[in-house]
Image 1 (cartoon, rainbow, N blue to C red):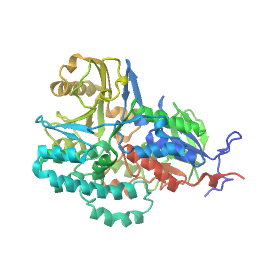
Image 2 (image 1 turned 30 degrees about the vertical axis):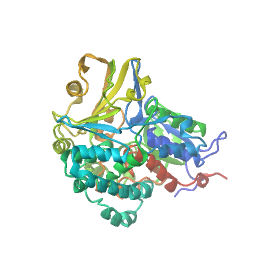
Image 3 (image 1 turned 90 degrees about the horizontal axis):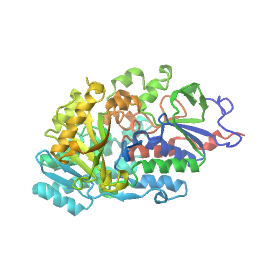
Image 4 (image 1 turned 60 degrees about the vertical axis):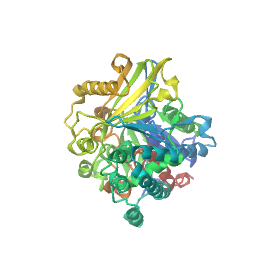
Length: 512
């Protein structure tokens, strides 16, 4: 191991003698990591290859409309509150979170619908309306969901899994809680009605998982929503990004956009900094990557430095599905459309198998429709609505040329919405843009265009996932969807919490 004197960099400066931490990427994981490192005495530089921060939470502005590119559902606001508290501030000083109730409305292909509510009694009444015989089973499921939440989120969500022993110690609890089952399997243990099985098992799709394959640990999301609610940041999710950037700058940290990292520099098995496109080298005491984990190992580190995450292992790993997202604004409004709507197609298991196993672009589709102007009209011109509609699709292993398929697929989504929730839509489009799996690969540097990194199956979770403290390189750390605990806003914020345990205090690097 290199001594402080031997490390080939000049991380301290006359103006700021603090040890230097470089963070690659400005998604929620990277921004949260930067705040936490700044609070622990590091001088932090965040490097973002795009022209603005956010990563998957980038903000698109077009023709007077504001569109959040990615996450729109905030379910664990206390994780943001913790970051503001580290800076001696309150989240409410900079961001207004508004509770959404119902959380979302599910519309089935037969026209039946169910509103997922915050109030337990109201939700039980919705269950009873659909299937009276499932009310008792639903309550037992929610009790089970809470038990998983207490262990999987509260006890383990911010704990590093640095050794196989860490995994073995929790194995009995996971088995006891049914973690060996799939989400759909655990739901089916309690629920008989096929529509309610869908309504209670679709959550893994929010984090890139197959409900029929994702470990039942992810059933904790049902209780997470019940416990903390579903929230929306006024001004859009980008308001949280802007707020976090403000915290970093208030700590004396720096955000550099249009700064693409092409290499993590290594000496004697330790990360020593990064090289940017164009050749500039930034020395660092520690490097934190919020880039896609497979990209970090496969593209930013030479093969000779990797023993576990080899090219072969990265190639054979299983990756999450991708997404097709259509952002559009309408002339006039659709007041009957909720803030969050899930429009289900005629198939559930078959469609998911098309996406994850067969990797074909199906003719039918299930859609998540986001109407932020239901809560914040300022995101569109007066008298208009802003939307995005998201369709889960296979990643780029599928034989789909999105250069030619993007517009036909968008038109198919437009017809589906016009025939169901949004009559007359085809004549009311004021602005339009799309994101395809190719964009996830080319713009966000996600391997295979997978929208959520590695698929969250049991054998790619916890210790089996790329570790928060790199197994390959000392002083290299990972945050974001591709590392523990996984994708979703609570997951990536929790990955930054893990750094409090695995990153040394800045005093370790202090110069005499």
